Each structure stands twice: as structure tokens, then as C-alpha cells.
Image 1 (cartoon, rainbow, N blue to C red):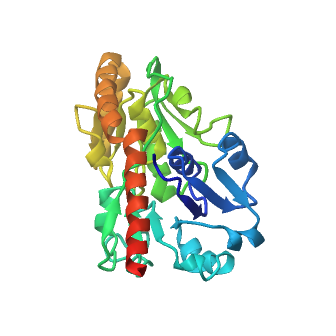
Image 2: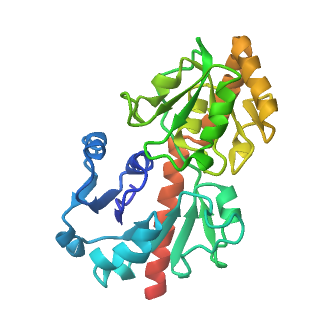
Length: 310
């Protein structure tokens, strides 16, 4: 039987935390989360909002950091000195922003296990010589299936998207002049992470115009329902999408526009590429693999820390 580790973290990405919670961990978070957060986690009894004054009394196994503020500042405000001595994991969701190759990660402590969500990010960060782990994202299988009945592509924005150059909104506008393309955003017009698969399923393809961001939940969810993906050949996307097999990636926007026009006029091609994308996604992004990786990492981190202190 798996040990039910008790973890404290500061929420950063709601969908990621929801997936992690399926591992059966007891996950404690500071109280004061948004209404949308509480609605999403209403049935998730193992994710527990905790009064800030009571956090220091929690009996925990591990601290999970997911952003610079929690690591540099918040831990000293809410955790006890004893809790700050617990095994620690830092989960980095993003590629380096200050500089693509020379940015030093703020984690320099050899006692902190640094985890990246893909190999591109692990490669580009200066990890200060620390050993790092990579755990690729996991997404749940959905009841929705790709239909592609709408002769139009779709772009999905996160609930709190990065600035326009990062998300490539100027690229979106340029492509929209050449072919039918719509944009939807998590948190607007009834779009949620939970119904995203259903909402995007009628579109012919997903377009990912991000210049410099980790491939998001929408990309992985689209692939999981059998939808082809088209995107810029940046960050980790070229390792996920194979040209002429599961979609199209390229640095030449004109090439991508021609391929998207082809998908709009050829629904059978879209269906075939989407089927290939789904086969890949089931292997790459399954929740089973994701949770197994996390359970192994947490067990290893906690066990090694305890052995070090003996």
C-alpha cells in the first residue's frame, strides 16, 4: 500500500495541482484561495486549505515549491524552522525568462530536489550544478472526442496568459487574416479546464502560437482527444509534435499557414494526424505515468533526506 505523504505547497497552476492530487497525497495549501479554485477542488478532500496561523502546527513529510516567491519569501513567513528542515522539492513550470541560456535558477541548495516539467526547460536553465529530475505533465482522458466538424482552428489562452509577445498574439492576428481561426480563454465564456476538451473538439486543429512557453495543458488535452496540433518550433513542442504525423511545427509561419489551410480543406488528413497524436499522448501524458513518477520522486526525496539525517 502506498504511503499517504503529507505535502505542503502554494498553488500555482490549478489543473496541475488537481492532477497531482489524484495520487492520494494529503496536500495542504494556505487558505484564501479563489472561488474558482474552491469550485474546482470541492470534491477533492485531500487538498486542504489551512489557516496561516495553523500551518506551523502541521505534521508534514515534504514541502513543494512551485514559484520563486514561495521559495524566496513565503516559506519564511508561514513555515516553522522545523518545517523548513523537511525534505524539499522545487517544481519549475517554465523555461528561463531573464535569458534563454544564461539565467541561473534561484535554487542553489543541494538539499532541494529540482524538478522540471520537460527536458527543454531542464536544458536551458542554469541549474547551478544541481541534479535535476524531469516529470512530463499528465492529463486525464476525456469523454470528449475530436470531431473536427468546424472548418476552423482554435487557439487556447490560459486563465492568466503571459504578455502578447510570449503567447504570440501578434502571430495569431497575422494567421487569422489568412484562414479561419478563433481564440478561447480559460475562465471566460464558461470555458474551464474540465470542459476544455469538449469545447475544442469541434475545431479542425489546435494552433499554438507561443514563442517561449512550456507546451500547455491545452496542447496535451487536444492530443489526448485525437486533435492535430500546429505550432511554432520553439521550446519543447518539436519533441511532442511530429511533422506530417501528428501535426506540424516550424519556425516558418508561411509554412504553418499553408499546412493549416490544408487541414481546413482536408478533414480526413486532420483525423489521421489527430489519431496519431492521441496514440502518442496516451503513452506520453497518461495520468498513470505522471502519478507513478511523482510517487517515486517524493518517496525517494523523503527517504534520502531521512537517511542523511540519521
